[in-house]
Length: 325
Image (cartoon, rainbow, N blue to C red; front, side, top):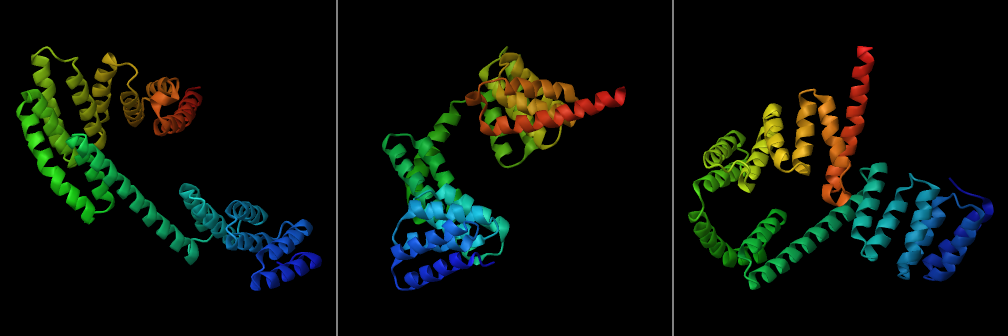
């Protein structure tokens, strides 16, 4: 929608300067237009386009944000902002701007193309960083670390020739080391590792069998409270969770918490399991325990999850109290 007549006149002058390549003069005219009517997004968008031409990306950023403020549905404002942030190497901010624009117009071709290109760029940079890290780990003799790094890189870019070249060097060394390491494992450790392998292959019932054999062996040897036993309990709880055996989750997590009362992973899993069997007050107690811990220990994802669970569980407990009145 056109703005104030005087503002539109300044915009028209700015457009002439823009077409003539005099971007600074165009900016001055667009500024005049915004001083009269700051609520017309086109003035800010055109100003941002001028700043792009003279590589004034900080100013372009500000103009684009003013454009969005003037009209949150003016999609070009998000494109201008994303362009400025990309030029400033703020790739995360750029992605957020693109996603905000696509929330307004999910079919916008310019936004979709830029997001696709940026995602590919980020992926390429991540893969290159993994390869550099792998080379460093290999030089330092950390073959296991190098192999894991290459596995991460392969998930992002399967078939990458640089990854395959490095894998050809690292994998044989890793397999020899693994074979030697496994040859020296106790029977209980073997069962635990078989459980880990089955879990990775989504064979949860098979994994549970292996973890149970590990725990039985440790119990016979008087090692029920060992670190290996705690890992087996924790991993078996993860398997039980996958097949919705909430009682099994509660039992294994409780075994871990009897040894390590502030084990965040066990507390969160047990809270989820308690909620699954409708023991809401017990779930709430575990959630509150986690939320009382230092943020650095809990981590963002667990903290966010527990906050959401606390709100949901508080509401459920209050409803149950009201129903019993």
